[in-house]
Length: 499
Image (cartoon, rainbow, N blue to C red):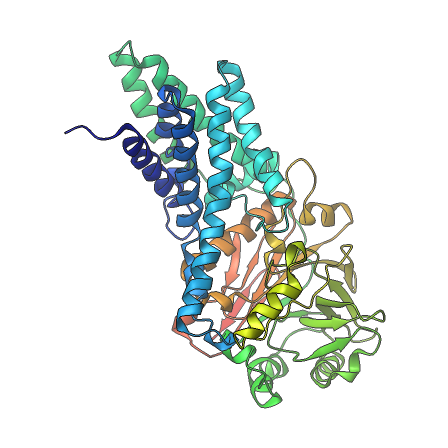
């Protein structure tokens, strides 16, 4: 019984997509990124139907991004937002399908372009560059999450982080695609010759290279970098349902966030980093920040201990523009604010002018929907004494725009000494794969920019990462200490962690 050619092609491409997705951090199969595209590109060369070719590429891209982002299903339950059980599952499914469809459409077009590249040189050079360029175009759209995806699969490897620091993360993606393209072309050339020596070389050299990359010692920094300042990160492990309940009171905040710092013996001039949400309820006026009671409490704490405090707040400026912000509190000067520039579609803003119709539709279902934030227009450098801080909120950490400098690289040009990221990953209910991917993104961003990075997240994983992407210290998985504050402290030489 023969299998329909379209079905056969679709199954093969879908399998390649799943394998490519399993190269993601959290699945611990980074080496699949260097292999999974080879058979897909090889089959593409013999596929005559452009329609089958496109839909095969669509399936590969859909399942690549869908597998990579399986953690999105842990967005459910959204019942705390007013959705019932069925609506919560449907919204979650719709979001995952959108992520997959974006990748599918992109990859389908890429495979069409690959098929049209008849010249070997064009395929080896043009296809990897086109891959990076197409993801760049996708990330320009308001609907896109700024995923590069392929480069982050290599973040656990010191050698690959060093390479990303040399050729950028986008260059690393192009290299991975080039590697897959090269071996697909080799298979095509060898197909009719059946040379035992050539096939033996091809089957042995690749596993040897992958094994060697994994076990090579991590490259050392060209010059030792003085650690900017002692850092404390407070992760209280408050779930999203508590943070967004509207009942976040000082009785919850004080023992979770304030008392651990108040009781900790840390040197003057240290930087305490709190997460994106859950510490300062309500809105903070940038002109009169002390009118917010909790922020006023933290300002006093900074003055009493002579430390700096970076904390996520919702802020309002003099023109009544509302922002998702980082407030830097100092012992001897007014608070400074950084406003988030890359907003989450449908979470922080509604793209394409759909805000009013969508608000009315959800109101008819008794769901209160609002996306109140404006995008910040520039990357304000925060000054903590002699240390310059570059703020990145939530998935701004992912921005590494190819062909031009991303946020982290621009901070480096402005003389920043330390990147700080405040996040709330609790939306995804402590999914370990999501946390591993976010940590890998931080590793690559630090290595790419050559700047140390501190990540503070509500429910983890929080971490302090060196300028070569090496994790210096991190919090433990949240399920080991549910709803219990974890504190990590690093001063450049030693670290301590408290559950």
